[in-house]
Image (cartoon, rainbow, N blue to C red; front, top):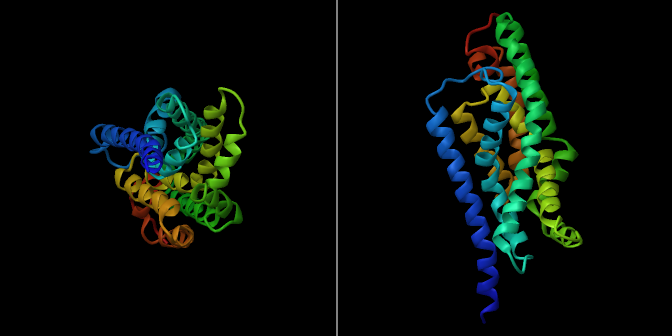
Length: 252
């Protein structure tokens, strides 16, 4: 009768470690940026600093929804579980760190919208909302979300990875599906402000609900429709996209 408790402990401990890491990242975000106003573009950061901040943000936002997958993967590891799960998590975060490169380029480019006339900045914000919202409704989003929501098949795939690179490859593989699932939500940060704390909290709740809630697919579609609605509303309420409009007003 000891098999099941041992299996449960194999999963809960790594999941707990991911949640602790996420909590530590949130503490850093809140203490460092909690009082900052929504800032356009790259927040004045160079590439290296932006990537460091971006990776900590991704740890805070993505690890809570990834903890159940990490728990499931941990149950497939017989020995040296903690160091191997660290490798899995680091590989997962490296995927998101790499995504920081195009994110930096996008933020730098869109940050120039803050210097454009109000109507132009609002139009850019609307385009961002449309892109993020439409992707939420695509089959590719559904595919990536399904891999994140039902990863049992992925566990069998990961078991076929040979040698010591298994954990690195498994973490990167799962990270790639999470990136495919959630990049559209991260694009919305350029509209809300990359370090907009309340936007980060709301998007973290969305990401976690999409992956873990029974109606996660419906949550994804509701967010997509809402984002498209924001693309229209932002012309009347530019403050919806402070990261691109400065929260100012636009004339119709």
